[in-house]
Image (cartoon, rainbow over all chains, first blue to last red; front, top):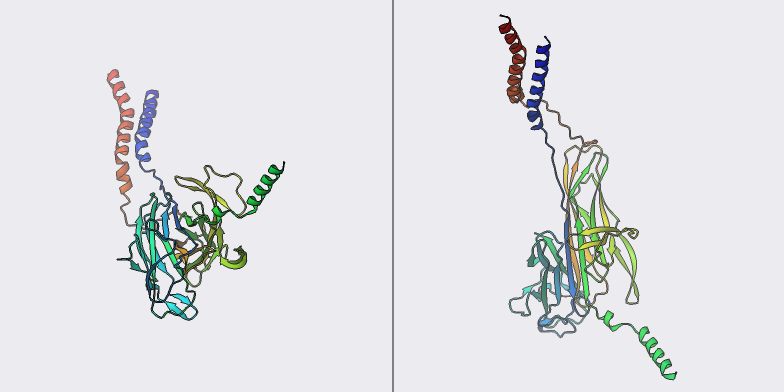
Length: 169
Length: 236
């Protein structure tokens, strides 16, 4: 009887040991993480603050922004290295240049990535991509601007806004 | 003695003059943001919050930020903290009024996390570079009690950054959109699952344990029968 009891106990222990892998295989937990999104974009503006074309006469074609040079654009657009998404670097204008009731079409302003107005793109009120940047890599782009004053344009101080953005692709 | 006095006078005069170097410093307009989770969970009748951080370590001009929120269903409340408000700013000898939600002054990149952070600011990590002082903007969503669990909406926060003191034909601005996804969840956010009837074979779990059961039966029978067989053989 005693031998039978001891044998039974040993048998139950063996069964319990064999059952452990089956029980362990059922245990699982979900895991998740959120990676924060960083975007840092700087517009460097040499010369007088803002985009300046100076004082121009009517019928002046493609006058350059006053601070840009052969090597430095009217603005330098920089995406910082901590930006961890691929970006499109873009620009647009808010609307026509206005001075009271008088306007100069926004499309008379142009941009390009080099100091050559030939092939430059007219500004629009919708964003246009100038360049792209890669996540985790700093990127700098020079942008040159020109403005054409129409024939017979009324005198005045004309203004608008130029937007620049780095937007996640 | 006279020479020393003249030197002191000249030095004093030079110090009172505005620094031509500072006045000609190239303007750097920095708009930098950090967004954590884009998911906002809110219970019916309750409120949920999202957060955006803004910092300015690469600029040398104060960044004024205006935020606008859109996309929330008509019966939801969607607000921004801090709300849009007017501040008076002195620039170029003039006082002007600016409408903004918040502004971020230029600050230094920090090599380690600040323990003593100025009021109204936070110290956030800038990956690969260090730390920076930042300001937070909160998106607060309130949903009615009657809203159904599982309802979702995509919220858009549109940010515009501007800088004062610009002249000329075009002022420089930046814009950026931030997306949030809002979900209405149950009160306890109870993730426990109750299966009503998935139609699966109830015997499936038994099949999985079958080898163990068979082995257990064999071992137990052996433990009981083998000693008896041995005893019987010995007895006769």
